[in-house]
Length: 429
Image 1 (cartoon, rainbow, N blue to C red):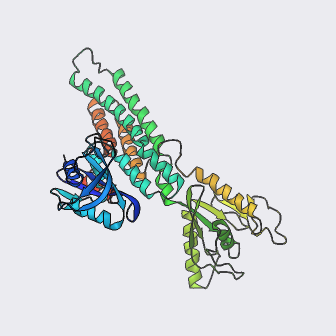
Image 2 (cartoon, one colour):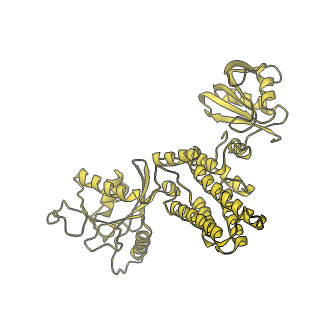
Image 3 (cartoon, rainbow, N blue to C red):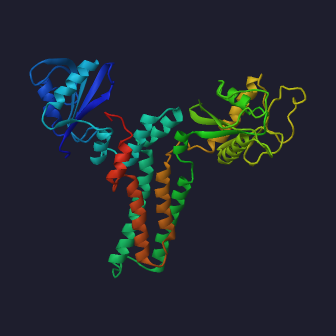
């Protein structure tokens, strides 16, 4: 059991109507008793008067007691629902700090203790970190899936199956002379076939877009020659004057970025300098070079030129369709856009959203993070590369695969890795 007992405001940071102070650790119940006197029965909320060691009244608060290990942290846990004024909370925290073996919690320490005591695994802890940072609906949904154990359930299933195969391999090695444990070529082939099938399943999962794409946001780059309407379209798409618009060619000299959240998806719109074959202007040349880099790196390219786009997957737009002589949609272009027609701008957003669905993780199943995909890919490679004729090597490849999957659940997580993860948390989580 963890030696120290920690406390922190877990919800309702002052000033607030109610602030909840959470106490977790071996001295949690003792500390609460010293502040509140006789405690209510477990999981029953009762009003108690809180006093410091000098007997001074601090507050009248709602007190709840949760004996371990069936708690959020796996330890004895007490919640004090106090009035949320700064002075009240500070006084209660000072009274707790004045007690033996008590100290303020570090960021993420409550969740870290939950991990240490097996109340959650590492994928669920990472999901909680993402949930605390979620800014869009899609980010929230994906994070909740991880918090609820969808990701860990998938990884545990793969780990359990790999463990079963490892047990078969070890049985063959340990009891090769026993008649009831066959080690002929057929049994090795069946074992290797099961390993290959699991590897294929895992590779199919890791080839899907990672959940990180939801947090990074999709880069939507507007490219084309000078005066093709890029800045005008950027302003129309983000519904504000993010870029300067003028009839002077070369007004945009560098990339202009504008963040937009639409239908729960984060986008980064990037206006670029107009592309030209040659220029004597050094600054313009730098802008063109950066525009070309942005076009290559774009998740989705909106191409606004009359010439064909440089990428086959670009959305080719016919802009300035409100000008005389440009009313018709030429062949090859996908959409006509007019700055005086909101419907045409909405159609561009529809095209972007349709393309975005193929770049983002699905919302109806577990979504892995990039580093989780890398570990799963390494496990799948270990399974698939195992030679079918060498039982010792099969067992070794299974050991490697199981180690990779176990790492994802936090079985052998390093302190440095845990420090980096829980450093993202706020106090009280």
